[in-house]
Length: 329
Image 1 (cartoon, rainbow, N blue to C red):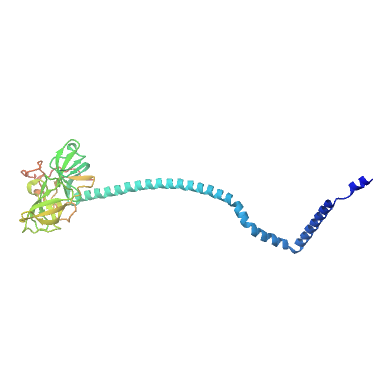
Image 2 (tube, rainbow, N blue to C red):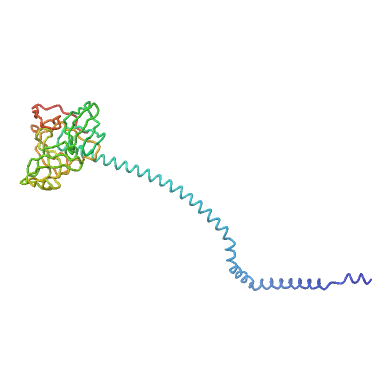
């Protein structure tokens, strides 16, 4: 009996645990009742959430960093693709704009050439430039028109600015032009302002001609316009050759040497005009760099000589009108 009664008695530790549990339950019930009636625990929870909010921010930081990296990578890839597309579009637009600008410049040059022929009432032929040789010892142009197009040796070559040179060789489909800047070329000129006659020589440079042996007493000064005089029968009179840029004494101090800037655009343009004849019109003088500074009378116009050096005999233009060639369109 003693053993059975001893085994059924409660242990001290179990009683303590039971009492502690009951106390917790009572405290929990009391807190719920107080929170339900006063709501003060809600304020404690709100303040606790504010206090632990930095912990939540730190806990979510790795995830937010990963999302940001992924979004930045996607944005970078998208921007890179857009940048490549826009760059290609910009290159295409730039190429189109360059072509349009080149076409506009070419149109302006052709209009200038056409205006040069129409204003001066010239019978001219438009010829394209195939090649250009501006070596200091050799100033030439190769044209894409030849004998089958009616091109002949000795024809005068002009552009919208003035005199370019003359044809010295003709083939079936091409022709060679000796430019006025060639060292072996000389052009009889006249000062438009005073009528003083001189000779302009090429210096092997596309931007310069020279007037040697200018008398000190000659009425010539910088800015004077030089025109073809028509002497020698090579070039019709009245075409602009250049403008006097400077004058200096020569080595003997007995004469002056003038430097001319050519009126024609020798280093640019894609087409030139081949002169066939000059119509009858009163001479007029244009400013420097303008087309056809003057138009001589028909009786003064002589066909260009085939020789490069030495004035040939000037043939007489027949009284009956020569067959007209098609005008430049």
